[in-house]
Length: 190
Image (tube, rainbow, N blue to C red; front, side):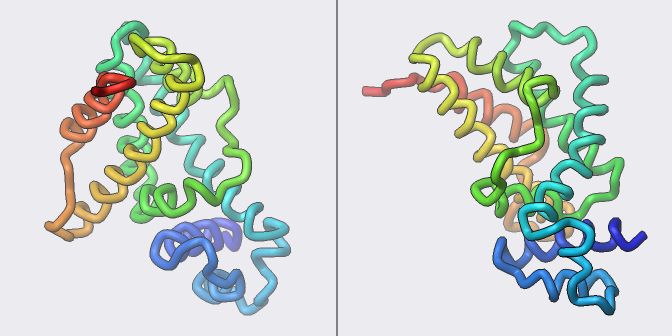
């Protein structure tokens, strides 16, 4: 119970206030009287951040594996649909309200994402890099990294819209189309 409360409070507070929110304030927001609860359970800030990512990743992986069944792995559009749907479905299933905004804020703060080579995310992004029609391996990996950055920002706006902020809110199909467009854009435009 304590760990879950710390994970939820950390996710929300990092999403709302950024990577430098004091760990003591996260403990207080989680209802902990012990100001060192985060350090006790996670070691440090990076430990808490990694734990939040791992905690949500389990559901994303299960959703992604299910959605990949029968998908043509040579179809960029279909793979992007699986990537987006696995994140959205897991978020809905877990009742998450701040995960995408957390990812948007933490994208550059996480030291060593826990998604290894055997994850759905890695398989899809590596396949998408290989499917790009042009560019060196480095350029193709850079393009899929840019896609992930864009994905996190678009999903954060999608999440804000679910809370009623009408200024934002691309739909799930719009997110897919924007990401596919990014992947298919010329590598070296004139």
